[in-house]
Structure formats: C-alpha cells, structure tokens
Length: 364
Ligand SMILES: NC(=O)c1ccc[n+]([C@@H]2O[C@H](COP(=O)([O-])OP(=O)(O)OC[C@H]3O[C@@H](n4cnc5c(N)ncnc54)[C@H](OP(=O)(O)O)[C@@H]3O)[C@@H](O)[C@H]2O)c1
Image (cartoon, rainbow, N blue to C red; front, side, top):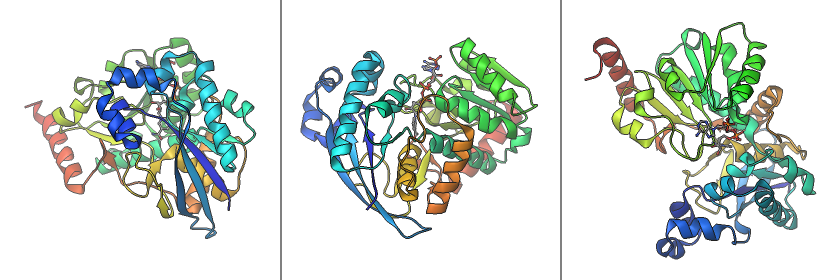
C-alpha cells in the first residue's frame, strides 16, 4: 500500500504535550517544556488508516510523527539545529517505509521551507502549503459569501503577505477583489510581492507595515509566523471576514468575545475521504485535517512521489493543480469553523445582523 508520513510538533506547549504525556504536562512548567523540547528525540505518534480515494477506491496509510520542538524553540534556535531534528524525524519516516513526507506547522516555516530537509532525505518532501493556500482562499470567499460580500466589490487584505503562504494567498485572491492591501514587515520583500500581484491583476495593490490598516478591508487572510495574536478587535471594520491560517493564531481570542459583528474563520481545514482514523488526537474533530496534511495524503493517493511544495516561493499553478487532485480524490473544504467551533447558520446570521446594525448606527 502507498504511504506517507507527516510531522507535527507542539504549538501550545501544555495542551499539545498533554496529548502524548498527560502526567508530564501536568507537572512541567511551560518554560521547562520549551527547554526540554530541544533534547527530546523524534517520536512515532500513530499509524493513520482508512484514507480512501473517492476516484480510484485505493487506500493509503500513514504515520504521524512528532518533531518535539515547541514553535517558540523553532523560531529561537539556529535553523541548522532545527533542520537536524526535522531530518532525524524524516529518517524515522524512511525507516517506517513512508513514500512521501509532509512538514507540518513550523517545520515548514523555519529557514528555507523544506529545501534543506528535502535535500538531506531519500524520500520526497512537501510542506503541504499549496493546498493550505487553496483551502484558505476558498474558506475566505465562502465565509464572505455567507456574509453577502461580493469579492468584486470588496477590499481584500493579506497579513503576512511577504511570507510563503501569505504571498501565494495574495496572488490567488487579488484577481478576484476590487483592491488589495498587503501587510508585512519587510517592505523590500513586500514591494516584490506587490509587483508579482500586479502582474496578475489590474486592480490597485497597496502595501503597508501597519496591521491597523486592515480596518478598511472586507476580506482578510492572515498567515504570519508571529507566534502570537497580532490582529485585535479594534483593527477590524464591522462585517469584516478574516480567515486565520496562522498557527499559533494571528487573531486574538478576544475578537470572538468582543466583536459579534465580524466573522473569523479557521483557515486551511479539509475533510478527508474514507473512514480515516488518525490514531492520535491532535486537536481537530474526526475526519478533519489541516491543508498541509491533506496535500501529503492527496499526493500519496495520486502516486505523486516527488518534492511537491518546497521552498518559500509557492507556485500558483501548483496551488490550482493540488486543489484539482485533492478534489478528485474526495477531499473537501471542511465546514467553516471559528476558534475551533463549527459556525452554525444561526451564528452567521447573527454576525450579519449585528454588522448591518453597527454599520448603520455605530458601535453600541
Ligand atoms: N493551517 C495550516 O494548515 C497551516 C499549514 C502550514 C502553515 N501554517 C501556518 O501559516 C503561517 C505562515 O507560514 P509560512 O510558511 O508562510 O511562514 P513564512 O514564510 O515564514 O512567513 C511568515 C510571515 O509572517 C510575517 N511575520 C512574522 N512575525 C510577524 C509579526 N510579529 N507581525 C507581522 N508579520 C509577521 C513574516 O514577516 P517577515 O518576513 O517580515 O519577518 C512573514 O512574512 C504560520 O503560522 C504557519 O504555522 C498553517
């Protein structure tokens, strides 16, 4: 049977370590988890079964592996130290017989986005970012449509537009909206992304380093590696829709409590075809996974054992291709979720009503 492996790692030190070591997570303070994560070896977490293609009926199996660095440690340590442990984890995938390896969360963010890891390993590698981008933009447009936002009349924004996922989201979204705002820190890199975006659309494209400028945007995709909340309630206009792709999240949890008039959706989630059993609770409801893992599974179902999405320049043709491949095998955009809760029709109607009310009379 064809197979894949996928690497995950703790994002929320206490909650995620508790999934594997409940007792240890109870006694260790967070600083100790960050510190010790450097010395923990790669782990096999589970055997993933039951993924079946809707197109061919073929099944693939997989393994979830942990590269036990917390997100903060990955950002603090020199990339070569992080690469070393990701490569060690990749060697475990090779020993298990995996035919392709997916890099989850910060294992694809650090350094060169999988290039060094792919060069060091004998099996092909993907960051899974192409399908993450496809799903994020789809979720954003779907949530926008539920809020009666016509993309052609909307101001689109991407926060983290100088990054791998952010710049690809910008290129995919720009041709569909009235104008675009690109938000990032490195202005030089942002200018380059603006030029790429302007090659794809004749609509206005602005750049800014101030996240507060998103207050005029209707449709916002956010994909930074800030590792903490950078979008606050005061940044958003009534009726705005945000698709938060970042893990840890870019949007403050406070937005959900304070702003009943904006819709924040979790980005990049897919429904897996077949009766998938992950064998490990990594925090999502049954049958759902992140776009990056779904890309790895879809490539295994397609028998495309090649380095697919590696490096920081995501090719939009690959984004469109993997979307077609994944759809053919039965992957679907998951029902819209917000801060891990399914968004009901009732909740969306309430946000729509409140947005209309606030737009008419100002905040209560
Ligand atoms: N949901 C999923 O399935 C999924 C899959 C893969 C990745 N992700 C998440 O997507 C995010 C982006 O990944 P990536 O590979 O695109 O990373 P990346 O290439 O490193 O890009 C990250 C971007 O974030 C910006 N940034 C970092 N800190 C910031 C801050 N404090 N304020 C504003 N901008 C900041 C960076 O700007 P500078 O370059 O100027 O520093 C960069 O443009 C990560 O959170 C990752 O965990 C999600």
